[in-house]
Length: 162
Image (cartoon, rainbow, N blue to C red; front, side, top):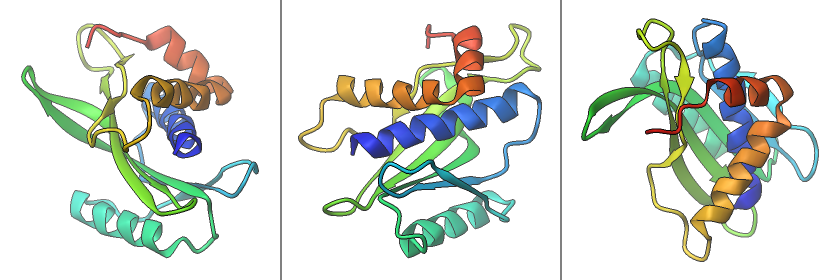
């Protein structure tokens, strides 16, 4: 699962690049086979329901025979403090047995008076059995910083208070 979490970090870094550049975050699909570089596809769906269906179908099909795959799209998470913008990450590991997970990377959009910021990633679904949450977070940030531009933006815009 660690390789999949790492791919999710890379996907989140790409999403942060789009958001930082004030570009709309189109639904992105990342796949990786073995130790090869990730491939990227842009999904065509535009409504939340259509994105969910197309993303799930893409993950289920695994046309490339990937070892892991991640869908990244713009959404929201609800917290006790209210609704926050977030990059939603649907993860699928096809190694050994299929495992899936959902994460969110909350962010503060440019139009906020405090400016753009990226918050700590959150596991929406608890960590899979047998996996240490701290080790999963380390894998996530290995993926973030494997993306040169995304890693630099993340560092410059990180707001870890939330």
